[in-house]
Each structure stands twice: as structure tokens, then as C-alpha cells.
Length: 151
Image 1 (spheres, rainbow, N blue to C red):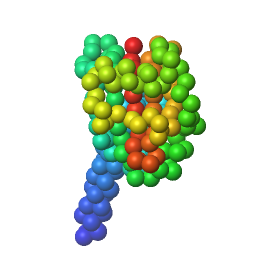
Image 2 (cartoon, helix red, strand yellow; image 1 turned 90 degrees about the vertical axis):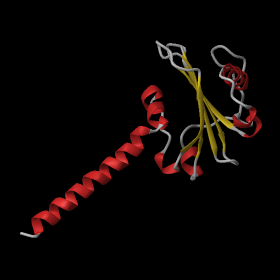
Image 3 (cartoon, rainbow, N blue to C red; image 1 turned 45 degrees about the vertical axis):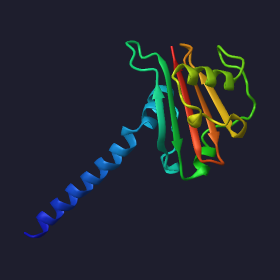
């Protein structure tokens, strides 16, 4: 008879633990990036949100979003993409740096929260609706910068 309450207590603890882990995985902005872009920032890198700013609420969801993540384990970030170092053009700008600076100026991000482009690798994608996402990765400072422009 004592065994039944013990099993029930163990089951409740497991459910709480699973719920807690699920909450951690689904509550951060990394989950939103996965939903919007199909891009997974590896949980095992231990990303932590260091800074965020956006252009504010919009009826259609358009605007600029900016997030800076610090992380503990570089190997997982290294494997996210085929990172580049060439500053190529985007849909609307002559270079990744020019696009990033225009977007960051638009939402008034202070210089201390902006990437040091010369020390960063980059990755870019555009959607059919002309929304764009840019990542800058500063492996030396353990920072991952994510810029999104939704149209």
C-alpha cells in the first residue's frame, strides 16, 4: 500500500520536470525564430538573451526585431550554418552591414549593443514575402546577433 503513493509522487515529479524543460524550450525567443524561419538555435549551446529591441507592435506583424544572445558552447553555434565572411548584398541593401546598420538605426539601438562586423561571421536568408533575417556571430565574444525585418 505504501508503494502506490510513492509511485504517484514519482510520476508527479517527472511530469513537473518535463513541464519545466518544455517551458524552457518553448518560452524563449529562440522558439519564435524556429516558428518564423525554421531555424533552430541549439539549446545545447546554452543561449541566453542579452539584449532585445524591436520596432513595436504592428497589426500585420511587420517591422524590425533585434536579439543578442550570449552562449556557453561555441561548437553548436559553429554548426548552425555555413557561416560566411563576405559582406554580400540583401534584397534592399548593398551589403549585410548596410542592412544591419539601417535596421538598427531605425529602432535606435545604442552602439554598445551592435555587432563588431569586422570580427563576425554572417548568415542571411530572405523569404518569398521579402522578409529577411541576418545573423552575425562573434565567436571571440560569444555573441550571436539576430536581426529580422518583416514585411
